[in-house]
Length: 398
Image (cartoon, rainbow, N blue to C red; front, side, top):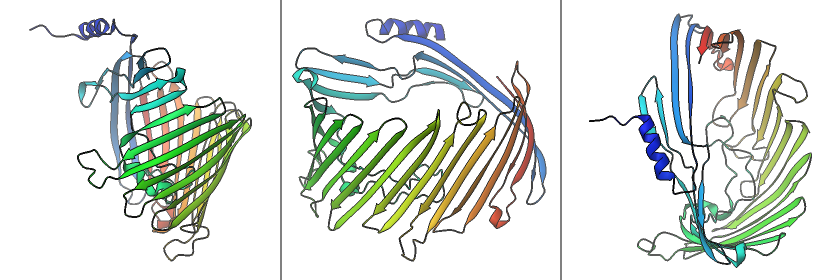
């Protein structure tokens, strides 16, 4: 039996796509590194070596973020877009070669009135409108303290679970767009309770100011939930700002209000502020962040980020005392030498205060096959007397 080589597969794919608008752009990426470290556990003073390697070969058949749309023309027509079109082979030192491709994205709709009207076919709309951006958000477990207690209030999270429905959006003018959404509690087979939710949204544009507002209501639910909210955003140079309000009546009245701003101090240098107050849980959360890039910015070669959370400021509940967290990371590129460090200090409600620190320094030895000498200290919780580990090593990269 003849083996199907990679070249043969490429030729087959080129032939298959010849009749479509897709453009095949084969490319490959090859990377890898080998590393040896010697380390010491500063808590029990055990020592030892560790060897580590990784190698990756990826062959892509399409350019990154490839998508293709098929649609008609005229005043009325159907339109469907397939996105995330990827087909690639990967090989690494651990698992060998494998054929991969991410799930395709699909957007289908009917376009009318010369493009001003859109009727949704796929996917269903999200009626869980949310105009207040949460200050606390720990969905990816990056931070210990933030816990996402103030997000997604409008609609009570109920409508976010409804996966089937359609929408109509109409662009009245460059300044005004209207939208209507309808979703069902389930498919016709399982929606015995005849649960439906409806939503209406409006967007107004006044130069640098954008106003968004929406209402939603659920029928045949135990509490007949009703949600509403609005947001005003201002975008210009050097300030982007917003204020928002969310509310719901779902067996009781709950609401939250928030605001935030991003200030561009110099090229790539930003300061961010966000504040949220929840009337239902009577709590005030605030976040301040500062970012200095490694290039340009205020100091060339310096990169730094500082983020401060102050949470549960007004909540006097026994389990919701004031909590806070500070994250600071900084580094400075000095030719072949790059020292950088980070500090994280926090005091969450459900655990004791903690302090963690890391210090790392890279020195570029050679350029042809990039070779780096490094030293690193990563602590545990210093407030709990966990000193962490110290490492010294070298890595060679492909």
